[in-house]
Image (tube, rainbow, N blue to C red; front, side):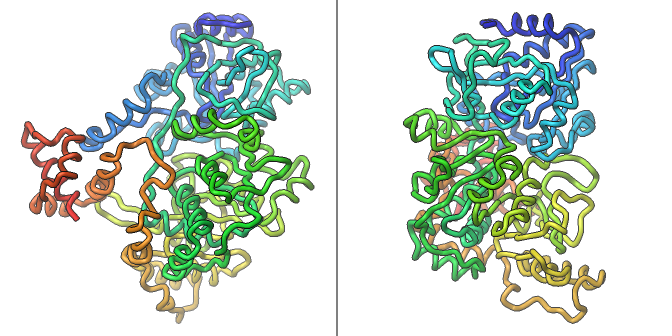
Length: 603
């Protein structure tokens, strides 16, 4: 049945399933926002309706904090998200206005968004991505909602960005293991991904299809890539063998890995020079002859760039990349839409059970995923090799496990695969720098018995099969030198390393300054830009970013020194001041901001 009004479709759902609705929504981009909002509003108006929503990664428009950040991000967010319908349940949760007859359960959260929400912390479901399906079936889901891309004839539809769990749910329904209404909502901006992602119109019980209800896709801006990210990316690139298989996680480190692989392939001499200066441990440094095949939970944007660069070119059953879902910039969606259908067919969107697991056609999967390198990121790692990616030691959840454990497990299940966990060696908050390599931590995502390779900007720690003492020594070698002595003392006190052990001199200069020197020439030549694969920011906004980052990470003392120093109003600085609304300050606060920004922009 087709609808052109979301409220009428919500009423039809209630008529069919009754007042107890168990709604499953895809992770991230694939949520049918108009339909979801209509159901939520009905339940908010009628307390007799019980609405339980199971989902992951509720996408919300970023909320800048602080005047400087609002000045910078306000116009950006207006450009990128104008017309995007926010999810009513998320807004109501933040306002403390979501009634108890509506409950939202997530197994992966937008990073940090619900850190201080007791309700959502309690409703978090800790799950590997591959286990989410069974939990949905156990919950007796009776409505599955999905944003879909239509054909002009409406005889077929594409699950596009999110076949990840929907395809397996539909299979469960065909087999009689589930009974639910499949409710689609069309979006003409979704790229039409064919193959496994296609479904017949007959699969839909209800369909919201109206030109008046179209909305722009959620398109977060790409993150700038820092020198530390690039150093990590370069180290990782030296661990990826030609002819192998690649998985990359989301974020700036993923983009850094992609750009490092491009440099290795196209500018091999420059790559080799940086390898020497960074003291790279990996021996995979030549251009790609056979090329790589991608098997990634998320089709991250740089996979398209790696295909265009001739790096991802090893086909498996005619496919270059198998992905479970995608989420990215407007450019990603446009590039996918503009592709020739035959070219787009070489990027196959499949169930997450296919990419995250070896079960089902295991023999062919093992043959395809030769020399696999599964690259994921983490917040922290311990000296004995445990990884902290999703939560804090007080139990609060930052994001979720997602598929990280799945890929670590695959790395051990495949004969020639490795798991690579990328961790920035330090983080800074309020002008204080802290180590992300810690002796121990009260929460772990990947236990130390699955330790494999950990990469920081300072190098590669190969932990697989090592003793605890050897693992501690490896991790100390990639820790920031400002924290090495304290970490070493903790390890000695606990008896986890020999009492007479000394960190080699070759690892005693792990400092940001060494990274800056190692990457200096390549950065000067424009080979390591802030956005290696493009961005949605203007040229002036990109030029402002280093200065704004400097202000954001400054201590009060640093801010005072910057305010006292000030800076010269060059032509470039004037453009930045205009963009930030500080060219003609109208208040004392504006004059202070202007002076701080000029100081931060100064060389």
